[in-house]
Image 1 (tube, helix red, strand yellow):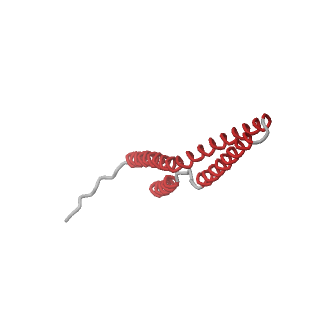
Image 2 (tube, rainbow, N blue to C red):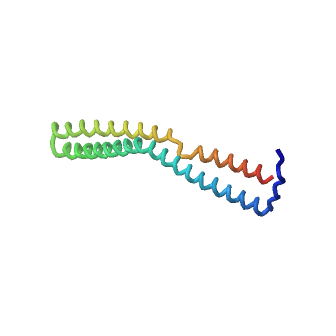
Image 3 (cartoon, rainbow, N blue to C red):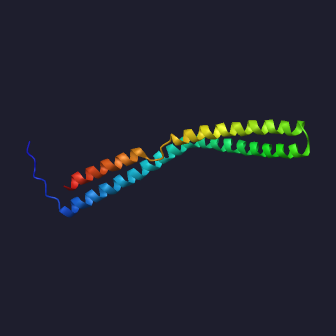
Length: 131
């Protein structure tokens, strides 16, 4: 089996191929980054919803505490005490929800780590090909 000699390629053709390959790699990295960001946003959506719920409950709690102060000034015992109890419970529940969701959100890394690693590998590959 004899192999025919392959014609030498021009340096400009080789460089064009390398540039084309690098452009394709960059496009792929952008797609990968988009997918990673979308995945991380989906992970963050539930804790963010809980955070919003906790914040709303906390605001309602504050509203009831203010209502309790109003009742306390306008009446003597029963109405403001009831509002104070309800407001305190809502404020505590809101605080717990906010604290839990903040902890969950802090555990999510927003950096697209797969893309960063792939870009590092591609840079090393490109350096090796150019040498």
